[in-house]
Image 1 (cartoon, rainbow, N blue to C red):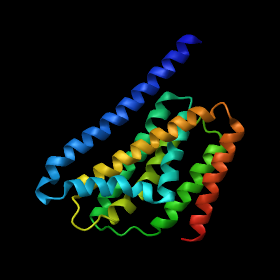
Image 2: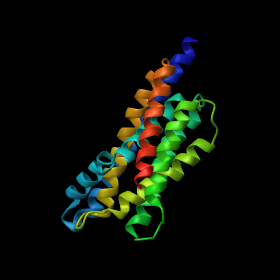
Image 3: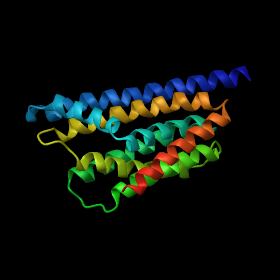
Image 4: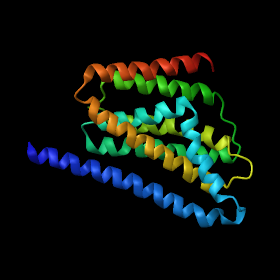
Length: 205
């Protein structure tokens, strides 16, 4: 039992380190690539702020972290936030390219509803479908970020910013999810709150 607890703690530390390292690497890689624009700092700051300024983005990213923390399968716990970020980067590229994707706002609001519902329903024994769902939702959020690239901002720096911000929100959600493991009533209430906000956003889409 003690060994299992230590193993779980070690894996969580590795997840945190991996996400943090990936975020830092993305920021570092973006700097030289965007230096010729003259505005790399602005792009990073805009990217960092974007997921935090929309309640639908913020709740979805926190919810993904909660679901990762409550998954018993460590591979699923790793792949769920990674899948979301990977999908978000793909969607961001589509947004940068000006590809027309219909019903994005509806899809984003729906993702909040679904993720909140999954928190209520306890998905600790979920399979590979959870990271795939996270990737699909991430692509919609990423597209919205990419389509709203500020004028004059470097795309690579902007993406680095919203990837780092998303990773931080996933980690916050993971910390919340660990606490909610021992508080099922609070977990249900949190999931209901997230889903309800998603319904309100969906109604206004």
